[in-house]
Amino acid sequence: MNRAITLAVGMAAVAACSSGCSSSGTTASSTPPASTSAATTTAGSAMPSSGAATPAGGAATVKTASSPLGQILVDGSGRTLYLFKADTGTTSTCNGSCAQAWPPQTTTGKPSSSGVTASMVGTITRSDHSTQVTYHGHPLYYFAEDTKPGQTNGQGVNAFGASWYVVSPNGTPVTSAASGTASASAGSTSGGSGY
Image (cartoon, rainbow, N blue to C red; front, side):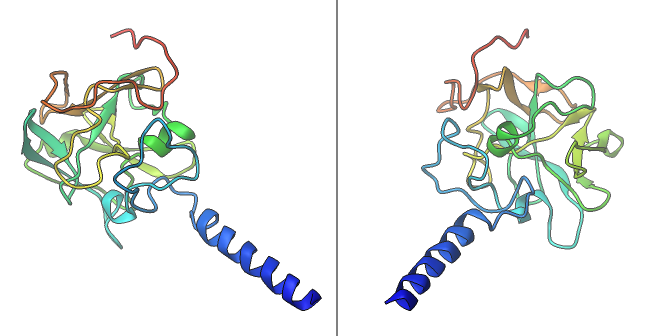
């Protein structure tokens, strides 16, 4: 009887660890389900696949793609990249639960580029010592609710104290809204962005 209880407790611990301990501490570890809401995305929840942020064994890519918002920056897989208006210069202010909802585009080497101004592509070192891609001085991020290439669900969202926008090839935020774009505050604390 005691052995059966011990076995059941051990199996429950393994199951809990496999669901909660599988995160490697990086900001981009697995794909969220389509129903994941940024308002409910918290530390430890699912993120876009690591392949979206950094191709296996290689560097991240920044390129352009056509969208309902015009030409915008995307990664090598076509996933939309965003900037955060709260960031000052090349310093990222999105950490903790913010980085869970808005995972930074990270790289393991020098980022490559296609169809963008290569001299605008750079990197910064984040507080967790990972390397984040920048464009025209803006740290770049994904949105956890963009579950496939081409989605721009984060456009214009006010979250974590400021607005998030897709980025044009000239390095400026695209502030117009596409039809069907999320406009409600997601995962944020209220407060104006000052923009």
